[in-house]
Image (cartoon, rainbow, N blue to C red; front, side, top):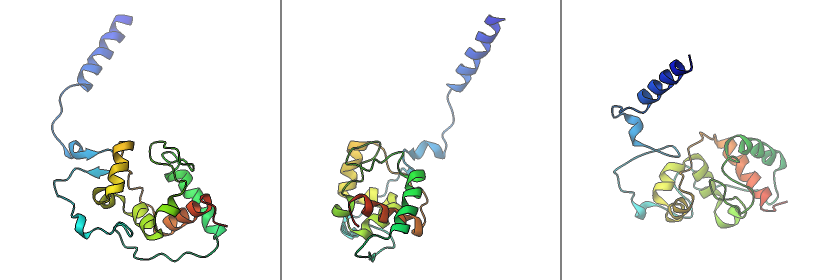
Length: 159
């Protein structure tokens, strides 16, 4: 009986480890990016704005607590498995001080449109060399991204 189970498991392992035909999955890169042969045009990239639909983001002088609370909820589902609220790296970099280093429109564009920014932003590419994992596109809505930004502001001490 034990020999039969061992034989079945060995056969299943051999089949699972066998060769497979090439598929679209073979171009997959960790973090949700497809492999591409196109060269990014760094001349068209604005490192203060990033790449995406946000040219400006108006922030209040004080924190919008309701928005920050919603952002914390979204971040708890989509972000904090990879990012800590400190400056410590987990999978991705820590969030401490991000609103002081980056413009609001850059943050919003990165949250909602990470792949082109990873391909073009030299600082993000340098961070990728450290973290070794591309940030996946989490399908964050505009309202969710704005809440996450407000949560980041709260984390950085905005009252």
